[in-house]
Image 1 (spheres, helix red, strand yellow):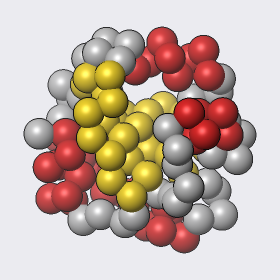
Image 2: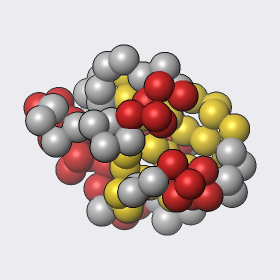
Image 3: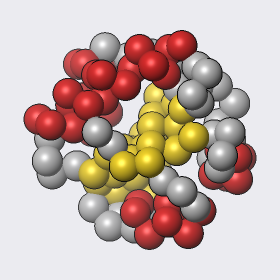
Image 4: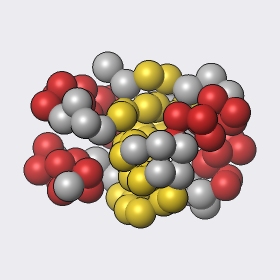
Length: 100
């Protein structure tokens, strides 16, 4: 299960190195809940990628920083740089393509 980020500082530290998939979500979001098991499965199969979650209601500063207006939004970072973004519910192959 992806680590849920508690602060902007923690977020910045987590994305600084390696490949990181960030799941921006909200607890009330139906599609976010539907995406969660897919993210969990892909995380188990790809230990080389770090997976983290950001609740946009708790950490709106991060959502604003990356102009996230719809959730779920998945953003992939490589060594702190945003390289890919996908909005909406994705099947497993779509999530895997993001981190490939």
